[in-house]
Image 1 (spheres, rainbow, N blue to C red):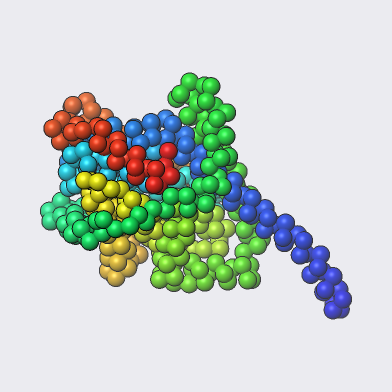
Image 2 (image 1 turned 90 degrees about the vertical axis):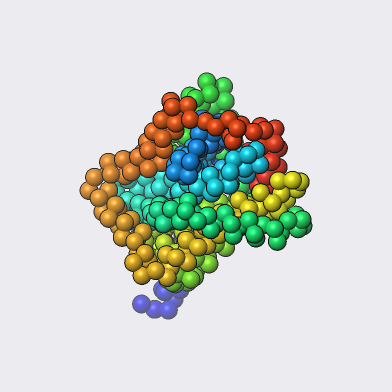
Length: 415
């Protein structure tokens, strides 16, 4: 083939390549809008922060606290919202020893978003296997972290004590709020809100369910076509860039996951974006795993900076809970990175579950329903039926809780 022919071929493929990349960008945007729409729908049906506060009213012990933290975050679809509610509850009289397990549960509940995103590939067995592994490796990391740290915290309270000491260092510091810095939210929220507005005339529950269904549909459509485009463009230089930023090794993966999550202010968004990459074969579950651990750390930074904007008598409590979240995730990453028998445990578990879902999709649906809704709802329902509620502890002062929640939520751009 002559040089002229090669040059002509290269020039003819350039416009098509740019169009493909524009398609990738458009589908990523559609995916983010879909995630936002689902979040809005869940907040609508659950009552948002107010609904999460009602759920937490039944947290009578640490075990119930962690389960209800999972349920509240799965329903509200925002660990930042749930964290702000927890701060308000602590200010209103809930013991920090109960609030810490709630934080652990919030970590688990927020992972449902990327698991839902993986369902976009449910028609293709092998692709779905890869996507589901990439999504659930984050779940298993958080689940095993709870199994390890919750008993230690119940017995010795190391996170509570250390965060209490550290919060004293920062009390009175300058406002480090990241209000207005969430550019991803600024780009996607208007469209997501417009979609939700289409159903505002319907009865509340029906409108919320319709919003959730539209969000799921947007995710499925974007993931299906995004996977096809990614398989065609993730070669050569593009593949090398992804490998260097995410797949180069555990340290690079953790660092990039932390940095990207700080920028987009949402671990759900960050981890959801790597699911299509895994489904297309651009990343393996082993490469995605440290990235998701970094996302866990990155999502704490925003809440920590926002908590410094809270002033008044509950300033230290806000900082203490935010620091508990940060310390818990950093220690989790360290423990799982250096302990030989824990290093690959989430990966092996995700691979096992992914292989089962490839042959029988009911495994995936049963897993999502049981972990995020059935088990937590059973505990919530049992507590509600038994009427276990300590009014002296949990009903202290609604106005104090609301004011602290509103201040944190305002600084986190939460609605």
